[in-house]
Image (tube, rainbow, N blue to C red; front, side, top):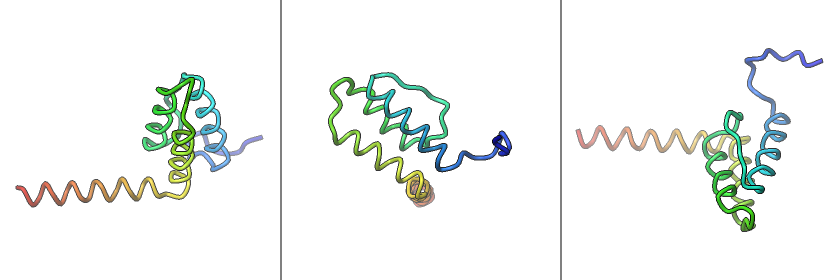
Amino acid sequence: MNMRRPSAPPTDTELRRQFEWALEQALQGTGRTGLALDSTVQDALLAVMDSAPDVPADLVAAARTAFAGQLSGANHRSRDAELENLFRQSRQSA
């Protein structure tokens, strides 16, 4: 029995399961929202889905790299740095 609270974030194992399922769906040209995958991963999966059924290997590799970035926190750090840069630019032009 799973004793996690329903609102607890998914584990890495659950995220991997979601990603592999979503990648298989994208390779077939279908997809689903509402997964616990970040926007970087979802964008990469959309690129895969848009290229189905003849998906180039580099798009699959990019999706796997994006997912690795979610697990490591690199996607989050990159997004934070982009937002900080935009904030700095807006303050300089004000």
